[in-house]
Length: 157
Image 1 (cartoon, rainbow, N blue to C red):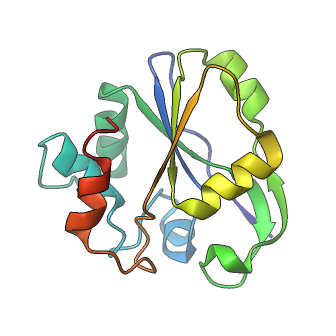
Image 2: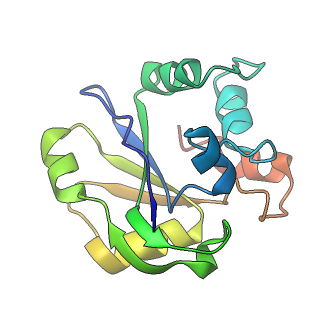
């Protein structure tokens, strides 16, 4: 069984980015989007004109929070061989009902890939007052170029 990380959300958070479940590299480092070829942090730093990407995880979180963005995963735990979402079995979703009650300023969810969206919809459906967007997965398993991933996100933040 593998477990997700705690959320990084605060009272200012308006946008929540949701992955499905941390991959092996992230689990090893205990940091969101830690695989060196994952485009997530490069995209965030490019969108907010803050390159180069910080090497310290806490600095990355500060940039998100300064822009009213939080991150979490749809799933609390699951069984999975490797890092691919297609291998997820026996999953349990995170407690979004409590999260949205505690942080009512969240009005937009951006799903990092189709699978996170699929798992969320399956477990929670459409939540009133929150707009959903699906971005291309930033995972290295998604072979779309960095430039094309970035283009699809420019207007979401």
